[in-house]
Image 1 (cartoon, rainbow, N blue to C red):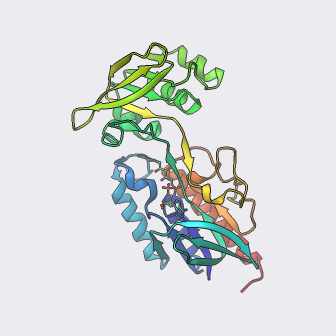
Image 2: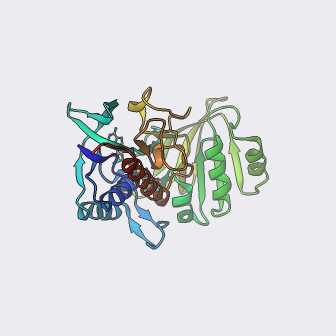
Image 3: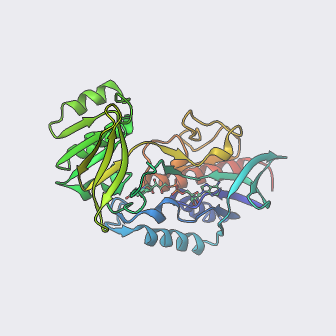
Length: 307
Ligand code: FAD
């Protein structure tokens, strides 16, 4: 059995693995796709001390760092069930194998909900973006749209309005769902247009990058086109925690509830990164939280009596 088994191989899992292995304890990482969301990212310019890198390059660096510390990486392994079993924790993998450990760190990350319209996949990272903190500066002086009028969409629009030339916010419903204070702030900005009852139907591009989008006015049924260079999709971030429902405490959004030490509601089980209730989903935050969860797991292990 492992002393620490980490489920998920993004920045949170990688940091947890390095920290655990450096304590000289048996450490394993099981990941469906080692690298996580970082693999899907083009430019990364906010990982402090690395002014510019690319996702696949950072993912490779994470893997090298983890391997150099003697951690066993089990890639292409999806966890399906977690159980407490006689002072140990067992994790059943798709395919039937069960991994056992004295402590577990859950770092299964999250995925952005996509619009599911033609063109969105083709132009991902070529104008279609999901993270204003990450990609906002790439659209300096340009026209962009934000899809989604909830808190994250309206926050994104306010944030982007300070950087880009013009923001059009499209909301499917007849009204925005964001907090009133955010809506007031948004409406006070001179370079923002709000369109409600709008169903985005297609992302348009020239083969290289986004040139616009089309939407249906849900009141009149008319189809309209907007010319712009960026589309920020803000219709939800879904934590990869479906398999943990009923096993430990999840927030109403499905995030694993953690305290400041990364404890979950189950003894010996810790969590870090985008799959948790920790705010602001970013690489540097996930890595920091992974390190923290790992130190908490170590604290737990030295206090428990098992060998
Ligand atoms: P993830 O990176 O999501 O990793 C989760 C890991 O868990 C993966 O290995 C996955 O395969 C695995 N996993 C999931 N479910 C299971 C399961 N059941 N069993 C086993 N393994 C499982 N952040 C920035 O700071 N800067 C940026 O520039 C930036 N750009 C981004 C661009 C894009 C397109 C996207 C999608 C995200 C971007 N982010 C950026 C956000 C950043 O990638 C995430 O905050 C970060 O990767 C979260 O790390 P994590 O380790 O918590 O989860």
